[in-house]
Image: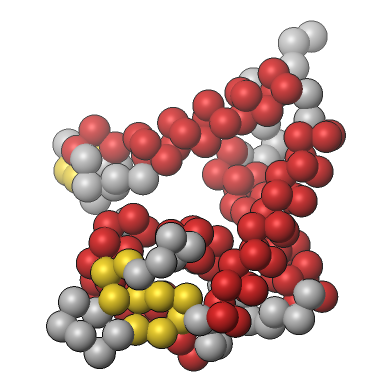
Length: 157
């Protein structure tokens, strides 16, 4: 008898569960290092700021957010003492000394988690996982595309 082609757990569900565990592991490990209040946007935004001063608009583009969304993310960093925003019209964002320490901790934690995955997953399977995740990132995220909209009887929901 051939295996059931429909997995017991749908791909989106396992993806969501894995993401939640990754976020929880990041938060717990950073907490042990003395950094409370981890947010899932921290790794990308912190690494985007490591080069120095970054205009808020550029940060929004890098994060794939509106300026308002980027402002909210940056406000969270400012509240935790990891970044400051220049009062200039361009709204330049830069890391504080505490933010540089947090950046180092975030990068070290990301590398440690990545190394754990690499050490326990066959290279071919890992490459396949990357391929699937890149497909999702590049093709499924845009729900405004007509070909991915759900349709029922010709009506788009």
